[in-house]
Length: 324
Image (tube, rainbow, N blue to C red):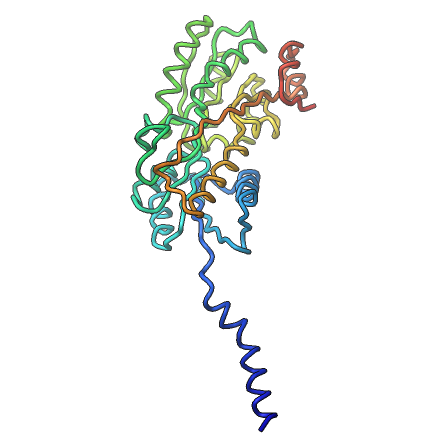
């Protein structure tokens, strides 16, 4: 009898961990939505930010990734799918179109964005200090750095008087950046010509047009689609011997000449930290929008030599990184 009781007790003890696990709450799930294709550096930075807050994917947190592969018309369905899965937070670290799709899909699930434009102007939040609603995040205000990028391009090719500007007409921030560029171009005595490109073929067509006009330089606007096509853009600029400036270091790392803009990896990290704060109980309506203040100038001297350019020592001295 004692033996039967002992076996029963042992069996019950073995079942305790299983019962305890069954009673534990499910891991919170973050929905990750982006208009482009997977960017390892962005994902790594996002995971690092979660790690700083004590969350590790697969251990105490799950992440559902959704990538539109530059097919903007897929964003609404992808956002709706994440809402149906009842994710705890929706994160859109790199795209205006993604956060707009997320906002259209839910007004209850918290959304944390990382964008390069003014979220107030876009109607995403009521104000930077008090967002209100279910949306908050990080703004890099990339279009406000357009003037600085144009000045840097002018320094590296001072003889250029005519500049081509590549923009994506589907980008909601296009108009604000265009207006700023026009003012900056006039102040620098530069003639700017704007070219639209919203797909791979239109990028090729734009560069063919550039070659017919003899532009002295190229300004690539801030856009998620362009970032995913950075290899194509850098290769075409080299083929057509066109000095170009880009908004992010990703372009320079694949052979582009020069970039100036916000550190996008740091922005993704901050988005993750905000998402973690919300998981711990913070209200997105009360989390002020953070304005990123980490900007970087990156120069590729090998690309400069291939273009026959001599980078001014003063420019090299102010660069955050020089890629040889």
